[in-house]
Image (cartoon, rainbow, N blue to C red; front, side):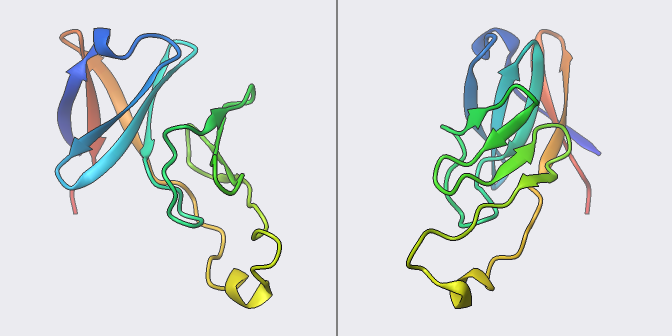
Length: 119
């Protein structure tokens, strides 16, 4: 694991979110109920941005575009949205259920750090 310092903890107050760039990866940081989460900023369903996604009471983030829901801790699919009406089943076959990539976080030296897995 390679740890990258992304921003001071004070720049992500409770209830806020921010996209940070780590190498070539855009990561969405969320401060939800005192816990810092880090997820891919792009929905794996149809590649829409997740920044304005609703966070549910049970700890999921919902894609604002297609309503697929992902667990904030694991990225596991909680609900995979059907394709919008009129798009058709043929196109729906292109996008199978995929988890939302997540990243480990830690607070150290009053800063938020994100863990990237070494390849």
